[in-house]
Length: 259
Ligand SMILES: C[S@@+](CC[C@H](N)C(=O)[O-])C[C@H]1O[C@@H](n2cnc3c(N)ncnc32)[C@H](O)[C@@H]1O
Image 1 (cartoon, rainbow, N blue to C red):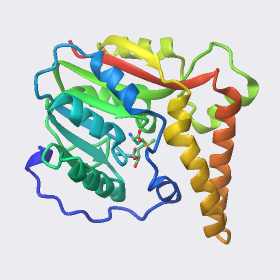
Image 2 (image 1 turned 90 degrees about the horizontal axis):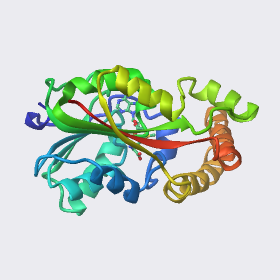
Image 3 (image 1 turned 30 degrees about the vertical axis):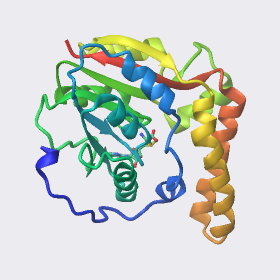
Image 4 (image 1 turned 180 degrees about the vertical axis):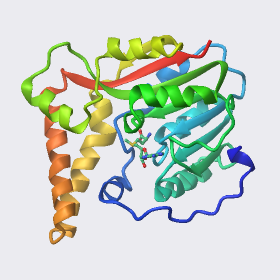
């Protein structure tokens, strides 16, 4: 189990452009404390102090909310060690050092026995494995009666503009509509508890607005680095895409139970 381990943080990988870009931001993806709380309160029958696994936790915006709301222990997994160090600092500051346990691990190779958790949570990260693949793999780590809650960027309309469709077909070809994803949940034998679309403010306030400012700052710092400049251009394109097409896609909370 994670919590019996004695961790020393060491860099598992060289920092990459995208990690550097998102360091120091309030979040590494769209979301808000209010939405995390809303989703948590939609779950019924959790034990008093649930065992929670937060996958792709980043610097832990949602991890802190989960620790506060649940009173339980939250194992927080991410592959990028500086994010985990930042989370460790924030957890200590908030008085949650003993209940938020950061672990460097890959979401596709979790070093825990099956049935370890009452709740698996993942905001903005399941797309890295694929919606079906992530749920299929993670569901083995949930106890019977436990829950999985994820957010994923999803099509909100059946027909999309050429511009949005061709952009996302390149960037995230696995993107589906909400009913399609709910169909996947059912096909895996999980019970869909509910879904809701994050408001646009959850993209702007804690994610794209600070990210856009960071892009501007980094353009000056990295003007002689062509890889970094190309990545910054890509982020600007992504932000402009959302500004122009936010009615067509959004980040969606999916809540499901293992029965
Ligand atoms: C879009 S961010 C979401 C972070 C956070 N949940 C949030 O909403 O602010 C995706 C996170 O997944 C992490 N990640 C990427 N590949 C991973 C992997 N193979 N295993 C675990 N975490 C990974 C990244 O480091 C990043 O923190």
